[in-house]
Length: 529
Image (cartoon, rainbow, N blue to C red; front, side, top):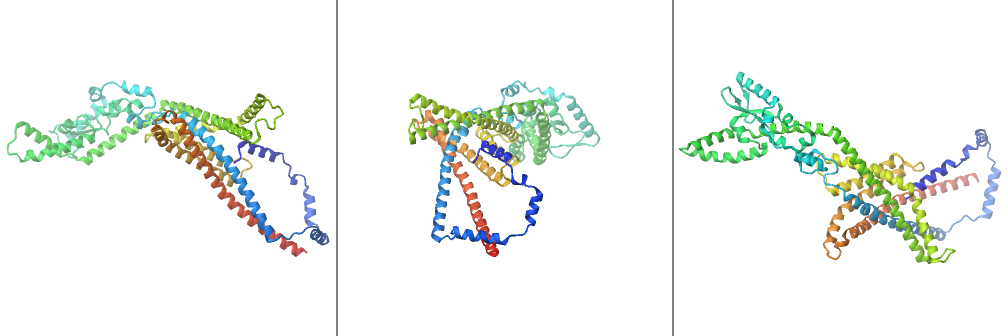
């Protein structure tokens, strides 16, 4: 896997290269192509070749060559596999499970931006919005029942009842002129007042409660039995109460209290549960539409989304940039340790003094890290953009379902790999074909999936280690090392498999092509001779 610096160098070299076509005049090419073939020179060339070179190859020589080629090819790939494995293990320990865990400490259930869905579950991203809900004030019935809209709609239904009768939305029966009715809040005014979504959107409760959809006429007995209950709760209680109806109806004599109860239960029995629930569903849909539109198009929501996106981008950018530098540092340290083990501490150094040699080795490490500053800048930029996008995606998801802290982290790490893959496909390096870009993108996506799986099993490993009293103080460090190592090795093996599968196929195709080309050249040479 070539890095961006190597690709940049290749592109630069390509730009500075002068091709033959740039130096050859068109007229010379046409003269050459139109010239006659000198068969005497051709025959002389092949005769001279036959005298100086033995082009015959025995089967044993061919087999030995192929075995040697296969061994060298496999050795080279194995050495590359070991090197990549080391780098990926270090990278995985340092970045997603080292620095990533530090960044994840600031993750919240439900993300960083308050959403209507989350606050209704009692989950707030900001203390400010939580405090606003606590300070909403107590429910005051007069604010809702003396509101102008409530009075106007009540007059409308009263007038309708006098002229032709009006329909009871609970029973679907006509309320006649001489029958008493109430104007019921389908979704109770108290429930609307105490709705965290309404408070978040900063909409006055009476404006949501007193609408044509939410104010419906019904029998007074039914309305006053419903009180401030939600429709579902009211219907459950109602169905439980009317079980007593049969017992009361079978009695020959009833007390005044029982007669009153009987009439109330008979009226409740007339309720059509399906129609009541349908009216409730329509009223809630209208209220939710108003709340969502008011909040999600507000300046407050936009500012919070951008602000938290910038914070997430900065955190992810720093994670990737610092992770790259630290990975390079540990890789350089291990390389120096390996060199010391193989060649001795002072080997290849003119000065044999310990501190002088140590200083030179440390300078070698520092130089390697310094040379990575451009890569670190690119890593920060990519991390920043993916962090900003992941915050936006998390916010959108939390409009419908609440995400856990670990899910937030999976989204962040997964989107980083996806972002890099899309970037590679849309803006491949100049010397990379679209086929190669697609191949590299597959590896990036596979890497993201493995990291996501690593994040999932991390909690299980962490719990397992913390269950051991001796290891509990080192649980976070051990978890990062263990999961990072497994993840790094898995990434390397999967990437190796993807590369090997492609290289083997490509090698076979090239061998076939070379064989066909060789046969063609031999046939052409024979025909010329």
